[in-house]
Image (cartoon, rainbow, N blue to C red; front, side):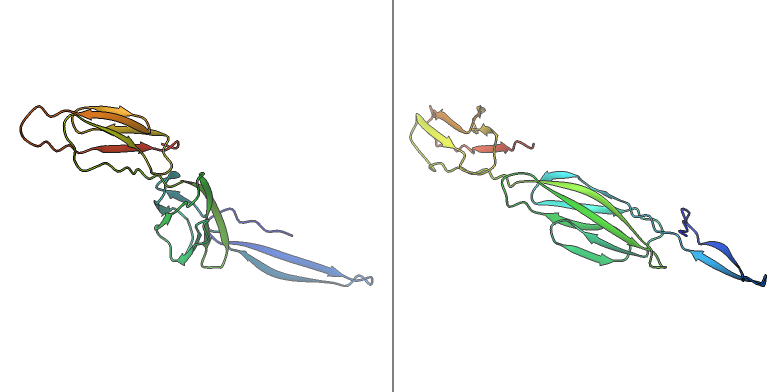
Length: 193
């Protein structure tokens, strides 16, 4: 027989055995069965997806657990008491990586429950370009993103001009006798946001 305890406290079931033989003799035995409650494993991640490196805090919401074991899906594990934990994910590849995070909750009686939440880690995004440090007016620059993982590019040329595209061309003009310094900023977005 399978005993079930769907509550949060121990349940006592009385068990009675009545045995008899072919001669009409009979005896009765009594026992009690204690069925301990299972813990309820549950947790909430601070994010379910993002670009790597992706630090995530897992907020423990388990009920009835005295010990938690975490399997982060990337080969890393952690074991200890109840409470929040943090893990940082990496994705060295070129496509999104989905990892299942397991929280295994253990009660004081050794009963177990497991909760699973998938986490998606997007690949590395890196903006990079090089530009000569100076030039004479009118100075035309051709710039290209040489980074990795980009799908859209926005260039702030430092003079009020904003250009889009992986490669851009811009001409700087200085009509004064003084040197002018411009800071070029490249913002790259991946296909995953």
